[in-house]
Amino acid sequence: MSWELKTQQAALVSNDWRVELVPTEPMSGLKVFHQGVELGTVLCVIPQPTHSRHIQEAYVRQADLIVRYEQHGDDLYTLQLNWRTFDCDLDGALAIELWLSVQTTLLDTHPVVELKSSVNASNWETVSLRERKAEPSERPAVMVAHCGQHTLLVMVQASDVEHVALQSDDLDTEHTLRMFGHFMEKGVIRRARVCFVAAPQPLDDAAIQNVYQQFSDSPLPLTA
Image 1 (cartoon, rainbow, N blue to C red):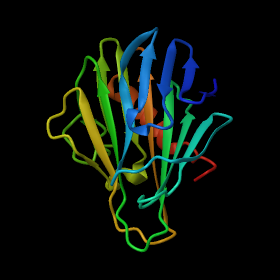
Image 2 (image 1 turned 60 degrees about the vertical axis):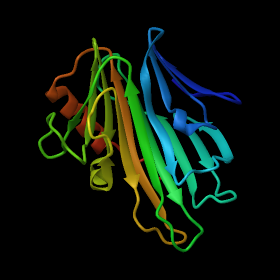
Image 3 (image 1 turned 90 degrees about the horizontal axis):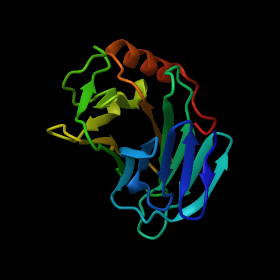
């Protein structure tokens, strides 16, 4: 299972799953298909303030698709997205990890990256880190959507939860997570890690907790 990178599109196929993304348009996110049916679009990367998205390089390395956007023109920072497959213990599931990295050459910046996810036939629920159960949370560790027989998860690395804020007031088919936003000095690199999991079956709280623990305990990417 490896990414296929073409000029305008990257795609990953695993069993009955297919995901597509456009490297030049990270705000378009990952389009998720199961057995040819589109379930939604997840992890749309929206830099704030706006970014020119001028690609410095894009390449596939083993299980990773790495895209670097240089600090170009009026951009306040560089942005790197590392999309990589993640092995989880759920039967028939697809898991993709996203490692975000921002760096600036300016003296005073406050970069923000928003991650927006939407599904076609379900509402999102939040799962807190402390309780590991579905409940309202402004800083969720996991976002869960049950789409018929499918379960979709957006998981935030445990060490990053305190730096993530849920922007959606009323959760429905769409949610937005706000990342970073703190003062960043010249030369500093700031990173965050999230993971998207799509399972072809309903998952109970115990299964969600297990896959989240597996993600949290997994080694960081080599680029970390």
